[in-house]
Image (cartoon, rainbow, N blue to C red):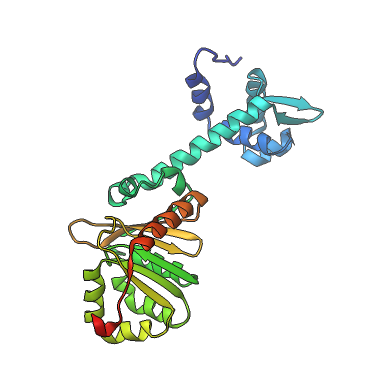
Length: 268
């Protein structure tokens, strides 16, 4: 006979977390009414386990029986939704934990909630260019690319690919510090001239850019994390959430308003 814990919310959280089937079963019933067989198939559990779960849920008033089917009550739906949100948050935290110190989330004031569906790509000893490769793969499906930052470690390893995409029709806007822009123009004069001649890219200069870099690739936002010692890209986080896009759009627009267009090459 199970005992219902009523003295503290942690008791019910512990109850749900203690079994690998309880959260899955409650979520499955919150999605749609199911009979015992359907619930058993949904969570891949034994008949006895399903019987026990249903009894425990009924004791907590989380589910009700209608004919041969079970469905969540409003209380059960409320709990299932809250647990799903908690699990999503924990999954996001686990994904970011190992690279948090290398990603400028705190400095750019991007809410963690904005990266709940983020793809995190981390460099490894056997694959040091994984973040750059991920960036290039995103660029290949991008029609409009915008970049803001004083650090070119993300673009430098793939500058030829970026320029070729611009030549092929990708529209780009880049906001750089004057010193960085001039250094790139002097180091790669032919490549830059060919790219600028397309009219597909506009370069702006800004004296006081933030410490982080920001990439907008159509409907996705990407932020690289750099190794402070080597300056190489150690991680790349990219996401398509509405919150991230709104933050990125407003941030880019702010610096774009303050920036000056790159003068003609002959004036530099």
